[in-house]
Structures are given as C-alpha cells and as structure tokens.
Length: 342
View: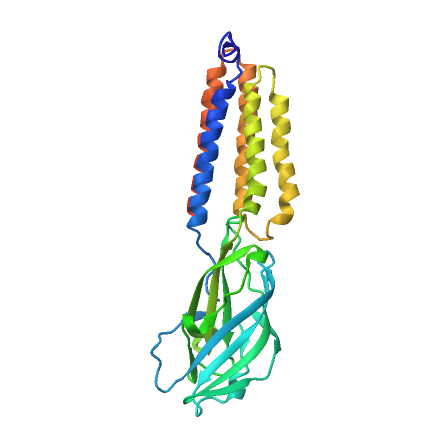
C-alpha cells in the first residue's frame, strides 16, 4: 500500500528507492571517471616560446659546457598566481681553456628574475673546472589551469646566457645534472617527474628578414607536479552533487514542488560565487566552471520536469522516471566528454 502512494492512483511522486539507486549509480560513475582522469593526468604547459631543442652531438667548433641546477627549497610556490621563488645552485663544468667564468656567471632565467646571486665557488676536478653559484630566483611564467581542480603542471627553469651566441656555446645537460628533491606537500603538491633539455632560444628581429635573428644557449630544466590531495575537488564537487540530488528528490514529493526545485536550482550559482576565490584567475573557462554549468543545467531540467508533469494530467510518475533517467544519462555523458577532451 505504501508503494502505491508513489506509483498508482494518479500519483506523480517517484519512488525514493528508485531515486537512490540511480543516484548511487551516478555517484559511482562520476567517481570512477574522475579517479581515472586523476591517475592519468597530463600537463598542458608547452616549453618556453621560441625554444628549440638541439641534439647532443654538437659542432666541434662550438664549445660545450655542462650546466646543472639544484633546487634547495621553495620560499613561494603559488600555482594559482604562477609565482615561484626558490633557493638553489646553478653550476657549470668546463675545460680551463673554454669560456671565462665571468661570462658564464652572467646567466639568467627564462620568464624569471635572479633576486640574489653569490660569487662563484670554483673547484677543479681532474681536467675540468666547476663554477657554482648560490642563487635566489623567482619564476613567474603563466600556467595552464584548464583542468582545475584536478590539474597537473610542468614548471620550467630555463637557465640562459645572453652573453653567448649559439655559434659560440651550447649547454650539455642530462637528468643527472638536475636535482629538485624538495618537499612540496606543504604547498598541496607533489613532484612526479623531472626532465632536462638543451637547446637555443631563437628571437626573430625582423619578420621580413628571417636571417636577422638572435640565438643564445638555454638549458631547460622542468618538473611535473600533481595535487597531493583532493580537497579542492571535494569542496567544489560534493556541494554540487548534493544540490543536484536534492533537486531530484523534489520529484518524489506528492505535492507541488516547482517552487522548491527553483530554490534548490538558485543555490548553484550562489555557491559558485562563494567558491570563486578558490578558482585561479584565467581568461578561459576551467573544469570547475564547466561542472557548474552541467549541474546548473541538470537542476534546471529537473525544474522543467516538475512544472510540465505537474501541469499535465496525462503525465504520470513513470514519465517522471523516464525524465530522471535521461537527466542522469545527460550528466554522465557531459562529464565523461568533458574529462575525455580536457
């Protein structure tokens, strides 16, 4: 007799058990898609503009200098503002007859600034001279936030020297010359990979004369980072799911629920304003923005279903069930497509 109140005698209320089953399936599917996307994260940051990697085999006429970077610790690690300040050591290994250390010491960082540089510490190992420079540097290269809050990034540290042309000198480095084993958990991140590439930065002076260019050597060190937790994801997604599921449950009430559904739907843009401070400032939409749009559209669909089925005597609880299944499928399809192309 209790179930008949939901499905018989002209009642348009949908069984709560039916709702719970679909909500469970929906929640598990979304969790599985997000988990897969997090485990198979990929970075979108390209190498610095106009950087061209070169082969390890250099022209014998070009002097090869081994370059390395050690990052001791980060003072600032703000991915939202793309602002990174670190203490470390830049070093060069060269033969005694090769470039003067004064010229080598006039290096800089691509998309960055050296805030402090100590005098070189010189040591001789065999037939090589090693010059080490203790530095404090700041990198401010913009980052790609399109997958926030499940984003991962590649942070570049490009050691360049404008004092040499690419015809005079080329850096030679490998992953063994780069160390960045620094704890990032306090900033909410963890390092997963390191890369090293050497090449030249090519700047065209006159676009009408492609021979009029400036080229200088660059040793490009980079680290890949992923978020060490899912607190941002939970803070954004769980309230959206709760509001969406609450809107669906208004269709399980036997009374008129359009007003309640409208109130629930209004909560989504209201919550979006509340969490705005968490979202990185970017000139494009990020993943969290699309999630808000998806669940806002889903809540709006529930509102329309409530109005249409309540106004039409010929529509029953079964028609509401069909509509609920369609809304769930639309949400899962939208989320799956969004995560697949991101």
